Image (tube, rainbow, N blue to C red):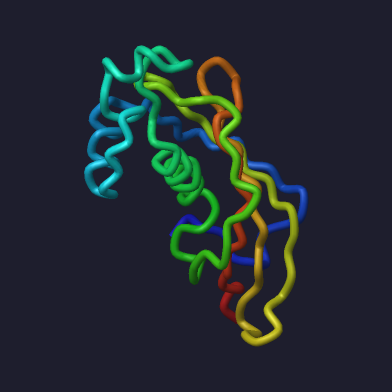
Length: 150
């Protein structure tokens, strides 16, 4: 288990995650298929040529999931009990097939659980950045984290 317990986090901690991921056309198509999203901006190259992007863009929910997923091994793997909420989600720049995403995580807030003495809440700030150093996704996520066993 490589995730951190609540007690191991500190407000202000920053993780520059070493795992990166290049997004493929198949990632985008499969995600759209699995989520029943027929948006032509994601699937139709000819339609997308006539948009402000000039090409298909990656489904933003896939980008969000990827940004959070990249962080798991170094932060919450085996030590989280679940996500309690995601707020302040934004997509500053589009993601295209072939873009490589890296992620930075900062710990914004922490507090012990009032109802579960063996847990605490950690507020994570995740920022997805492409190979051109452009922010492509931002999310604030609250996780219910286990405390280190006594």
